[in-house]
Length: 163
Image (cartoon, rainbow, N blue to C red; front, side, top):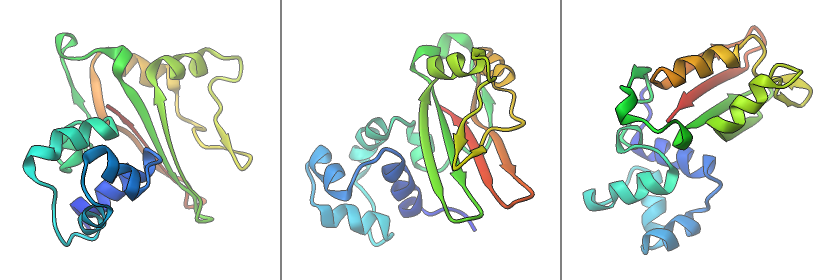
């Protein structure tokens, strides 16, 4: 089933650790309007889309569900690697949901560390088997979008999106 705008908006809001009230204050609207967006009762005015995307640190394409589904190469002239983020989404089989936004510079530090970038949550290395150095190499050459989507044998789902 395709993610609705409201579901995507709520996922992005929660990933940014914003409450509905936080979003309402930032956009100078009511919390009820935000609730209606998340429940797909109404949608934001088109003139607010860039402000919403900027607030969540995503493109309007991602906000509208048009680009995170597949990775694309972007020419060097159109990307600033220092402003890119690794967005890691983990849904564990146990019901835990983890959303982490990591600047590319921090991912570089993880990749070069002695443990090879192990990121552990509840004792599990959530990025086990994912070569961070290889991912960074692809990002530096211009790969953006959803670059990893894994479902483990345990039922854990991991997604890595670069924006």
